[in-house]
Length: 409
Image 1 (tube, rainbow, N blue to C red):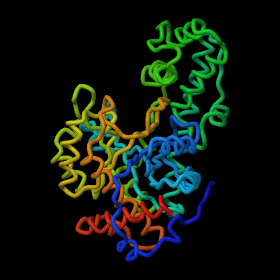
Image 2 (cartoon, helix red, strand yellow):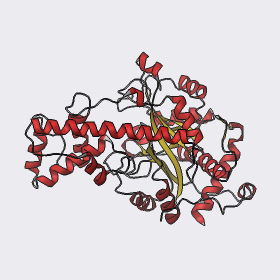
Image 3 (cartoon, rainbow, N blue to C red):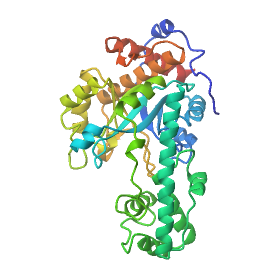
């Protein structure tokens, strides 16, 4: 099922929902996954919902780059599977001052580059013409860069006398939707090698030629790792098909905030936190300074991908921001070829404790309440760009009732 109908049109009014008995369960929630509308481990949106139901997930959030194209199908599948949908989006912004100062924000390799999410966007989708134009510009620039990569890749293959050729339009038709990304090229290369050669030794020899004589480190059967090697050897800086991003195509933090707010959502900062060596970026190293910076920029929501973080480091970090009134939510991304479980865990598969799950539930409930209110033409969690933090408890209560009503009807 695909739908553009208001999912909350027949819900009880605010007071009736607030009068409902509080739900007595602590749901499994994954508030951040990508779908094939950007790049995803899933073949289609329904696969994500099938796996979510199998793992007992009650709330699932779409979070594609630069697009709301997947919302209608996501809403329909949510209705079919009785899994509450969160309508989110993701952007790459550029903070010029941080770039000039060499400050790494939440991209460990590119100073100034800043990933930002919008949470709880209006559904059915509605935004101004200017916002739509900016999103189309971002998509078109991404597609232009990727097409230029394909052209350089073909020139390299011809120069190296490797019998493979690619067409950007065909890659998009076969592996992507409206947005073509670097990972789609890597997938197309890996699939082409696998289709051309049937035995592992021939495939390994082809990858060795593609990598300039370097033997692949990954097992031939590990397609996710192979695609990452393809990106690293061919498409990243120093690779023969690398095309740098045009800085003029990035929005500023203020522009992203304006766009997200116009679309009915709330700006959210995705936290990278610790890497496997326990190191955080310059921007995130001091939680108090980060909190000050976020509040100064009217950002009242953070999200983490706990699978890349140490449990103890994450626990302390989350507790600090929760105690200071920010919404905290968790997800898994699933924006690589690796099809990991949807249930959120910390690095090494360490499970979240009930306190972390409760914090995630509260943050998610506020987003759910916001979606419900905005869809019904009512003010949500924001007044202008400022959060209604003093009313957070009411929003949590309302959001829990909204989620419960959706999944139990």
